[in-house]
Every structure is written in structure tokens, then in C-alpha cells.
Length: 87
Image (cartoon, rainbow, N blue to C red; front, side):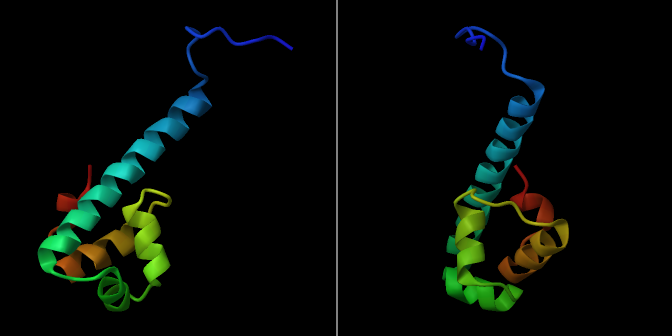
């Protein structure tokens, strides 16, 4: 088995996973900030959107992304345009 060199460029698959992880992280930061500004708890936001508090937690922590329709619902509940939540 060939060892990867430290300065070797990551595979395209690894680069894509990294881009997605960064996107999800920044999306989560923006959702959490907007939620705080709106004065809502994760539980309150979850109920408004129709998802579990764990799902909101996972989005805010960048553990999972969210489909576009759910992002629109979150934005509506927070009183912001969906584009404001995008990284």
C-alpha cells in the first residue's frame, strides 16, 4: 500500500467532502446567529419549522445540512430571507 505524502493533493472526493463540511458549518453558524437575534430557543424554532430540536442542533453544529425547502422554512420562522442564511 502506497503511503500518501504530506504535501500530496487530496483526492477530489475528499476536497468535495471538505467543501460540504465547511458549507454546513457556516450555514449552522448563520442559523444559530439568526435564531439568537430572533430570541428563539432551538426548541421553539424546531416547533415552528416542524422538525425536532435535535435536527436544529445538528444544523447549527454543522453536523448535517438541510434541504432547500427546510432552509426556506427556517428563514421564514426567523424572519429573514433564505439568502441571509447562506454562507
